[in-house]
Image (cartoon, rainbow, N blue to C red; front, side, top):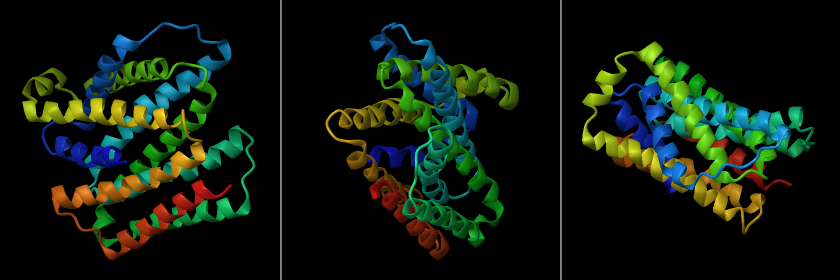
Length: 273
């Protein structure tokens, strides 16, 4: 969770240079691809798994990565983006009821609604008046992460390395294409990236995308999802601490109150059976 929290802080450091968000996302996916390709093994994918695999690759590789850095680029402060990313869990619950026909009790629905109320409360913070679009982009990132989680439930028979290699290659190609079309000067920007920024980009791909995610999947081999997933609520705490250390950013009263509501609601959602 410490590594997950650091992704936003270091991402903002990279975006504060001349690296645009879509190009940053594509380079991060390239790092993931290069790390996983030596371990990639071709395996026959059943027809029923092709559609979920495509959805997972597009939502995680393109949607989550792209919207994460677009929201960080748009926002002057990092903390609301970190807190807003927690909406992935409520979104996943809503999508699972629609597409997987999972029954959700009233207690869970109460905390799903309260998590959105927390985000609305954050939106009223005076510092965020000019950053509302960043909060909307954060909601987009959370929504795509929820889609990735829901579609990923049908991919448990496919090797984790296979799914993530295909996801990374999809994200790299599409985000790079979008960067060339929208942001422009791609080659010039890549050539001008400082070695210290390259280290942060490699960290984002190698340590966060590969290391943190693989650690999470490793835990699932020994513990049920219900025991592991609640710890996901801790990454905003570590992220906010790192935001204070790096940017000296102190969340306002509204952001703090809204953050407590969001993180608390998400934690309880994952504990309710």
